[in-house]
Image (cartoon, rainbow, N blue to C red; front, top):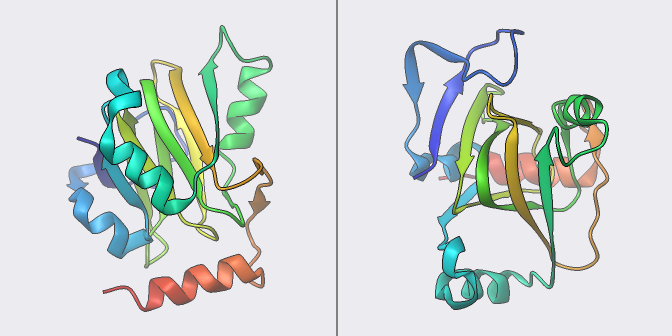
Length: 180
């Protein structure tokens, strides 16, 4: 099961866990209320037969997918890429990631603009909504293999903070304000 917590504001190595003392864990069920992030557990070892995965793809219209291997061995300019991924940004489309192997962090801003850290591991499927500020980094293992899903053609455009007048951001904030 995915682990979720409010993270400290330390500028220390982003690959560390960044817990408060004591840690402030968040039940995964609260992710949607706090940041509109959705989560499912998927059987990635039997993906072609995983009914939940098929249902999610069909219901949400995910037609395109690819895989990304993130490690020093597989990614050119690893340090520059990780710096780019860890810069706070949002996308005008939702960001869908299925963890196939390894582990990494997605940090998302909650309703109160505090950072929530999500440790994704094998089998975790996360959907970050369009317009939500987030960032991504590997953990200290420096390896994760992800399946990226899209409704149509892949779009990787990151919009850096601040961009409060962007329609996707405005819609996200309205959705967040109405969360129950």
